[in-house]
Length: 269
Image (cartoon, rainbow, N blue to C red):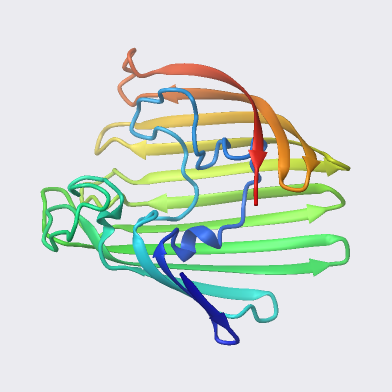
């Protein structure tokens, strides 16, 4: 639910945090199945990275309260507070809608504050969008190797006469106190729209450090695809994605490549 007025907007419920919903960055050639924080990949990417995730979000869809300021001179700020991060079924949670959660779960991040900001401006034929997001969790109960989680990200988007270029970068300490265990994600993409057609390409990279004296797991994603607007809210989308997965120990069972072809219909309303 939300309340909106001259004071801004207040949202309460199971929704993405401000650091996620205010994101501006890499355009996705295949809507819903991009390479930067994709909804689905149709492939098993078995290293510590799995898929790149360049949008700042610790709480995901866990229930929260978010406040957005009015947009002033192109600038808008949002802040989210998540009291309990167990809305999504991640360890050590007992699952979605499982009743009241304990406030002393070892290794669990709660009392999460996430802030997002973006700036939108048009200069002649150029559309400019800038984004920054940051998140901080509070460890409920000390666990071996765990600490308060910190995450931050940046993004930008530039549009000019049908072309849209975007890029982003995210850093996450993953809530671990061990040295050399940070996660880094970034992506870049370009699309071109003419009439009812849009075609684009994007690249995304994610890496997780494996610890002191070790290398890192890495995932690279490459994507290209066209889309055609059949009518208001109806889009035909398609494309090809190529994944390259690397393991810090060069494990044969993990290191792999995958090529995925997608064709589908996107409905929005």
